[in-house]
Image (cartoon, rainbow, N blue to C red):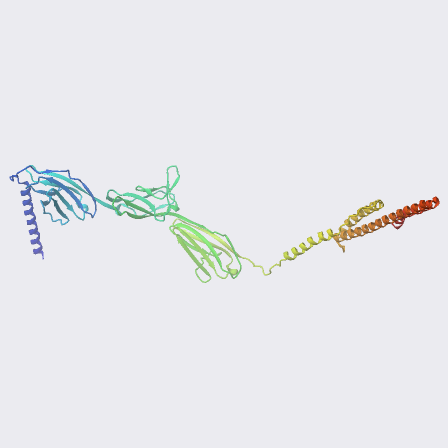
Length: 484
């Protein structure tokens, strides 16, 4: 196997040497006489920039080529790539394309980083003519792992520097973001904190970090060539544990389920546990069920006590410890006695009674009202006496209203007094009406007697008739006075 390989290698070397000799002889031969004008370049060769993996094309435009030859070389090391239309290099990604002996194109397929550089187009005239065009290879960004940190750990209050290096063509730009979507806290020289969605530039400087800045940061490198790349850098902030509880006292009836809460913040993550009133660590079991919910540097601790009894009453402590320190807090559990009887409600009955009382008394009082009567002159004297009775009746009502254990209420006494006044008023009205009727009858009798006497012509009869009529007119008031 080895002799065959050696023979192939020697043969390949000999063939390449012969091709090189032939190319040099052809290109540099000066004894070739050509008729007509010498070849010239039409336009300067343009440089090209192509992304990695694409095809790069350099164009060399020549006029009056005649019998002359065009060759392509790599300017850096003078490697011959082609002679006229024939490719002499072993690089299979290189090809020559000629259009009407005027446009000579050098094509480099599947461009690689090693293809970056300048290329020469030559014409084998007596005085060699040449043009140079360069190929720039765009390279997508890539993170330099050897110059980029993965994790960084500092104490709370110290400064942190996150470094990230990238390569590519053109040189990539670095952008920082938090992986959890939170804003990046940047403290300036005036100790003011700015919250930014992203920060450009490398490295990322964080001054006097606190626990809220802990997390994963993304270093994103990008240029004009896709795709962009990123790398995660984790910032850890060490601090001693902090422990707090939501309720320092929990009350519950016996034979019920009790749940105690405790919250811990620490980094590195602390060792957390519960102790009873004697300071003994509470184990996991049927009686006590312990839960932990972890989120970043926070831990929510829960102690569940099944079927609370007298032995479970007391103080429970929540403890946390790590390499930075330790902390604790406590919760006290005591029992409450549930009520056994339910008090009756009497508001409905009372409200009904009140409603009945408030609606009955005013209606009873309003029903007693004296009749409106036009009194006669004789009646006015009686009304004066009745007014005196009203005053005395009002005093009686006041005294009645002050009774503590009387049979009748003040409202009832007032109703009876009003009824009594109404009945007396009715009797006065009847007497006044009777007196007026008698007076009218007497006056009519007096007029009748006087008319009869004058008609008969007897003055004596007229006088007697007048006295009788006068007696009848005066008698009703006397009768009423005697009746009163």
